[in-house]
Image 1 (tube, helix red, strand yellow):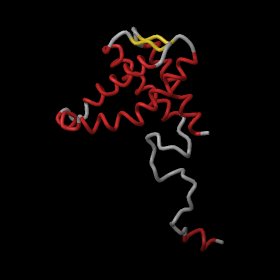
Image 2: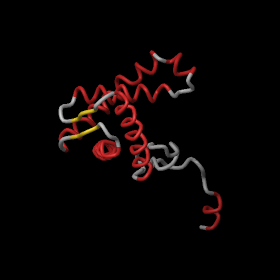
Image 3: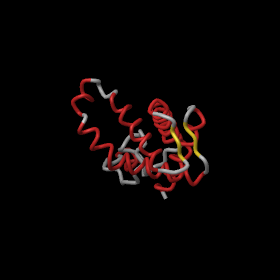
Image 4: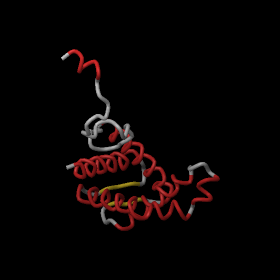
Length: 140
């Protein structure tokens, strides 16, 4: 269920980024869904490899170069998915920035107990607490 929610949030983020950025167009909801899936797969498999390969420049730029990697993956996704069109790398860079920002905000807003969308990894996992509440034991 969490995967469907995250995918829906990614589609919403992509559609909003396309509305905000000139040079990005999505023809229909199927293209938005396919683009969100492709972006998710690119971020899962290609992004770690690209970050590792560009680690020296990433360290020198204090992580700013990751924005350029995101733009490259956004542009590559537009070349793979029909119905998702990005005019150039500048539009892809701006679109990737908006996509990431909107996705972050939606992830924080719709954060549920199972995910770690910027929240604390310790809270909301449904685990039993390892701390014994002494006051509650004395009162009962």
